[in-house]
Length: 135
Image (cartoon, rainbow, N blue to C red):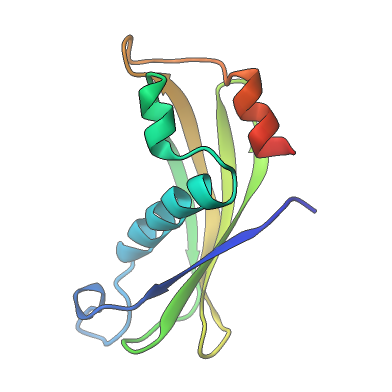
């Protein structure tokens, strides 16, 4: 089983829709916040470090299944893990659930491609990055 990491975020009033639960688009914001946190805290290579090396991760595809709502006052827990490593990208699997109820609100996969910021072209993942994300 791949290493799994968790980030906990509060549900803010701006996150909630007219039905009283987190709006479906906000789950992508939660995933992005969790990835930034986990890249630095868990993998030891922050997004800022990628930028310093002239690299960035670009979203290529999201597949999200919405299951249950999270409400204002709850806390969202975002669990992620590397599902697959490709030549020029990764597939990150994720699950977002309510800390209070334990119910899964959303789950899915996100495909990210590594891009050279100078050429704006995809590039192969460097070996040192693979070691940090695979070890």
